[in-house]
Image (cartoon, rainbow, N blue to C red; front, side, top):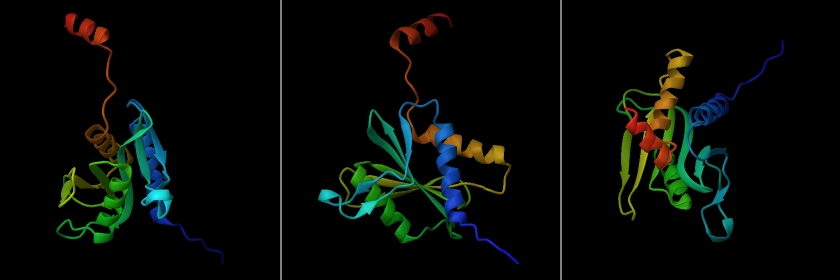
Length: 164
């Protein structure tokens, strides 16, 4: 009897990447998956965040998908926080986003001490027990919270305000 194994962590990571890319289609910039960067000068200690949002070629947001369940009191592993802290440091970002396959409630923000500027790491649970449309709606909400909207030109905004 033949059998096969599915790496659900990779499936979840790929799903989150595609869902973020589609949800951010109307936002400025672009989504890059497995963005290569190094933590040290010269690029040693290579790292590959799952998703980086670039605007004008500069990182504006970083996301890492975790096919894990949050703990009963919404706790997460130290390793997840350390990994995102390294991503934020290397990308010079003040906020990073961990996306968990299961959890409850609203995002939790971890403020990292002794960082200047301050670094915050948000953990975002996705409720995968809902319908596919509802899961995608959760991703759209995440994008709305974390990525800047496309700006309208001043003339267009003025014309729109005059027609109201």
